[in-house]
Every structure is written in C-alpha cells, then in structure tokens.
Length: 159
Image 1 (cartoon, rainbow, N blue to C red):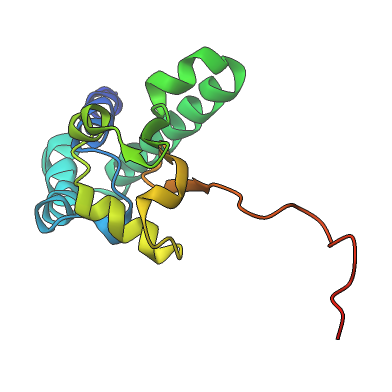
Image 2: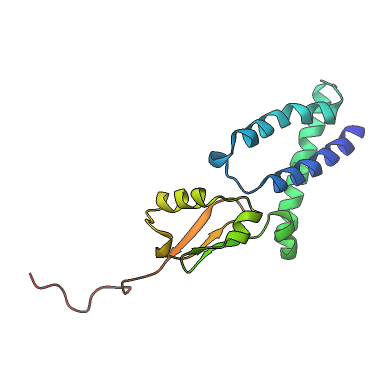
C-alpha cells in the first residue's frame, strides 16, 4: 500500500511540474526541458519504489499512474469546469496582427518562436493574422484575415 501512496504523491508532483514547465510540445522542448523529462523517469522509479525492483512494485506503480491518468481524463469529461485546472486554457497571443506581449511573457513564448510557427503555416507576416491562440497542448492556431470571398466566382473568367 505504501507504493500506491508514494505513486499518488509523485504523480501529483509530476503533474504540477509539467504544468509549471509550460506548454511546449515534444518537438519544441528546450534542451533543459528534454533532460528534465528524461531524468524524471529514473527519479520517479526511485522515489516511488524505494529501490524495490520487484515485479509487483513496478506493476503497482505503473497501475497507479495509469489509474490517475484515466481519473483526470474522466474528471475533465464529467466536470467540464475542472478542464482549465487540469489541462490549461487556450491563450490569445496575437490580436489584429499585434502580439499580446503580456500573455506571451507569462507563458515564456518568445516572439521569434511565434514567428517560426507562423512561417511553418505559410504566414509571412503577423499583419496577416486576425488572431492566434496558444492552445493548452502547446500548439499555436492562427486565424488569418480573409481577403477573398468564400465560394465560387459569380462569373467564370473569360478565356
């Protein structure tokens, strides 16, 4: 039973750490963040099992982590108000072509990283962006101004 209690405590700590580190996706992790996540596995094993290398201890620890992950997922589904606390909220980072520096600073999102993400989606300038949202999972969604009407032209071009 001690392993289950330790697993719960470490799981909650890891959840807090990953929320505090930020919204980076795996491909966007800094070197430090990547090292932190890689080393975390070994440190967690030691903290949870107290060097107990038995199969039972490993299964209990992994099972507890899996159960807590499912429980958090269920809580987000069943109680939608918990979602911002558990997973985070989307954050507006560009409005009318202008970066919102206060929000970017709080999330440690550099302007250079925002510009790279825009270029990767074929956006040449932030002036073309109506608004951009930093999603809870670290992706950035860009919404550009529509300069053309939707649908087919009224008259086909004369050839």
